Image (cartoon, rainbow over all chains, first blue to last red):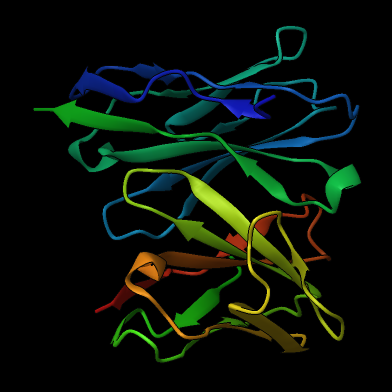
Length: 115
Length: 117
């Protein structure tokens, strides 16, 4: 079974609008971490936001927020006030301590911001 | 934040030759480094986990004799693609785990684009 599922291969959003990128995960480990990364065309992986499995509140980092629904095992990324520079690939990832802290990545969502 | 460097950023080599890619953690000691491979428009695929002072742990389907990993120090891991073939052309990304960080976060290098002709 896939550890991380991203069902949106491509998304479009109008500049200045908000967009939600979906991510669901699968784990039986009670302790885990969820991450979102942005990968522009240059290839570098840029860390955006982190959510720990025991965190009570949804994580926020500037224009990024994570809609953490633990019972549904979903960790959607919300980008508010989209900018042209937000156009990139976005990857959801999970870290499980029981597997040596390796990261499991989703297949990614390509976001295009339209002016 | 923590910085991880990779060298070279781009390399073109001829089929049959070997290529070494370096991954360095610049401001922390990384007991564990990871090597990923990424094909165009696809996700990152973990190739191996590199532990300082011990043998790397390879993922299923990754040839350990072809992709040699050496983690000789707490700040340096190298990936050597031996007898490279055109199908080895890919984007290779390393990451290093900062064990002192509360989130056990991985910091990614900028990647190395390998083209085998």
